[in-house]
Image (cartoon, rainbow, N blue to C red; front, side, top):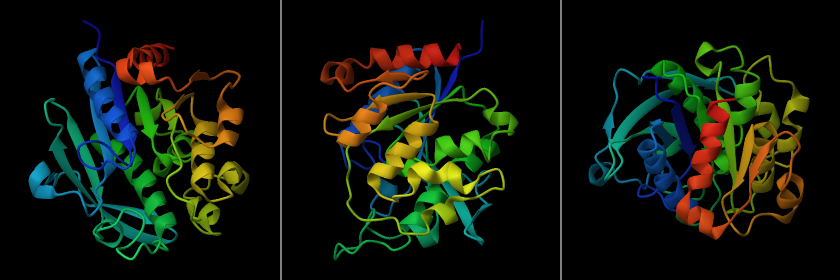
Length: 273
């Protein structure tokens, strides 16, 4: 019997833990449907402060915790927690850190003030997710990145993590969703995002506007396949990525979001190529 293909979902939101946009429910359904279709599935997301650990039964995975993630010349300890997705035998891993994720807001405080370190939080999450996979020793055939906060992961896989054996055969799907913020991630995002000597500043050109659209653009540029996860996405992104030579693109279709069969076909196609 052939080994199961492995798919890892990395998202900044996933139902029932955090529901900022409609795609949080779709990520939940995709994970379950992929599992039901014979894939071995794991999920990773940030442990934002409003996620109730008791209600969702999160507990620390001691054997995986203890990694230090270096961002912008500082080391930050990575704590990893896990829960089982309700009504499914699937593991969701939550990346936590006292400095970045203990606060109650996702991107803004209670007064709606933008967190000045959202750039570092994003880089920490993207790098931390890939370090977690290395620690698993679990080579994914597919990584499906959903949400702007995962935008750096396709770039990192093609550069900083290119020679990591665990990612040797990994293909990346990236979902462009609706814009959810208008603020900037700051003028130093590009400089801080260079986490390895294999990354050149020009590699980060798609991210240089350091806004919501730029994070989607950068993720789509470096992905092997692109999907649209919302009806209303930035028009520029629709023009740029509606059709891309050499990449499979799944346009938004409300019926497909209900059925999700096209996603499963895409995963099968990529994992067998």
